[in-house]
Amino acid sequence: MHLHAHFHRLTARAQMILMLVLLTLSAVFIVLHGVRVRQMKEVGLPAALALPQIEKRLDVLKEQAEVMQLQQSVSDGSNSEQLHVYVLPDEPRLDRLLATFDALFEALRQGTSLTTVSAVHVGDTVAASRDASLTMTPVSFEADVNEEGLHSLFLFTDVSGLLTVGDAFTPEEQSLLLSLTEQENPAAVTALESFLSQTLLTYAQDPKHSEEQLLKSFTSDSFTEALHTIARESRLREVTRLFSGNFLSVIEARKLWPLRFLTVAKADIEDRGNNQFHIAVTFTAYGRQAKH
Image 1: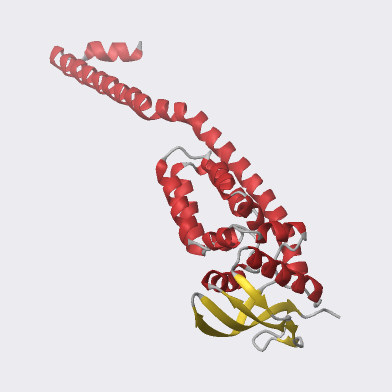
Image 2: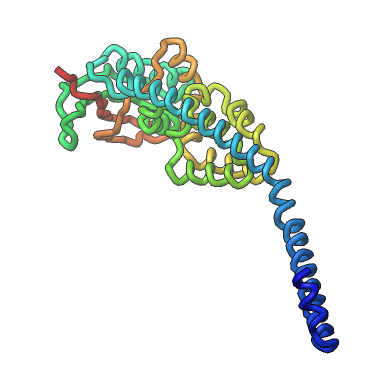
């Protein structure tokens, strides 16, 4: 009532100006309200609709991280044990080492890649010069082989000591596979981790099946082509080649997997013509210093 009395005391001109001001302010508030409503429609509502998808994605990521952690812990434990017991043992384990060479020679003979081989001579074990925690044991022999047999002997040392599919890839090759996986299907990272953590022996038994299990998580041809290219250019190709003959079955039957880590210390090769070579080779078998 107080405001009403003041209004009537104003002149007709003043009343008109005040009414115009009030109408203008009302119009401004209406426009601002409309803008706010439109913003809610354009921003608020899409965000509200996307929220369940975001929450779902977070749940997937959490589950994926938990699975990967579990797989990693199990894989690391298993691989660490195999590494210490077989790949870099703290005991000589000469019987197992000689049995592995016998398996290799048998497989090469059956594949007609090796004709004769001398007895395997094992030298004294000494501390490695570059790392006192490691030991080195020289293993030498002579053999008559063809070109395929010659390649297999060196391939044997290149593959020795590798445990998983991931070990056969370089860090760059693994990073490329991970990057492609994240681009196409982030949820398939666990499938990639499972593929990389497979033992090479499992992969060598059926490479096609192992790769198909991974490819089930992808729909495009780009990842398939990338996987096949990397597998063909990596040491996986060497693994497949080495185990393509009888060596795999002999290794399995005699429970000689994983292979001891070996390097070539010396190799004298004589080309005798007609695809025949005589090789005198010394490998170095590595181990670990026993803890007292």
